[in-house]
Image (tube, rainbow, N blue to C red; front, top):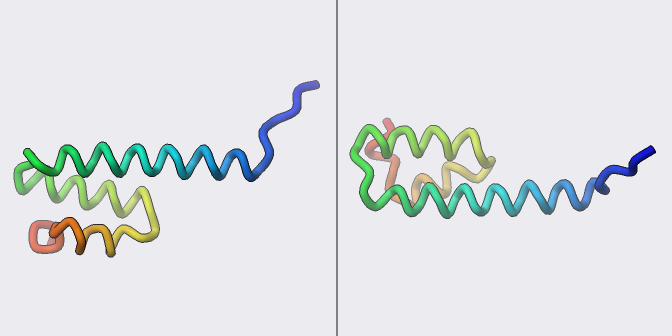
Amino acid sequence: MTVGCSERQKEIKRRRKRRKQLTHLKSRLVKATNSEKGEIARKLRALTPGAEGLIHTWALEEVDR
């Protein structure tokens, strides 16, 4: 019988992955076209509950709507 990770460890792993994905999306934002920026905004919404704040901070709201 194997013992799985604790819930705390799973949450830490999810946070680290989310942070890595956010860093990746932000780096892609520099060269992104308008349609790509809309796609990044869509992915942000799916990724995190605080997406609207990030979309505002990254100035994606005019491209997204």
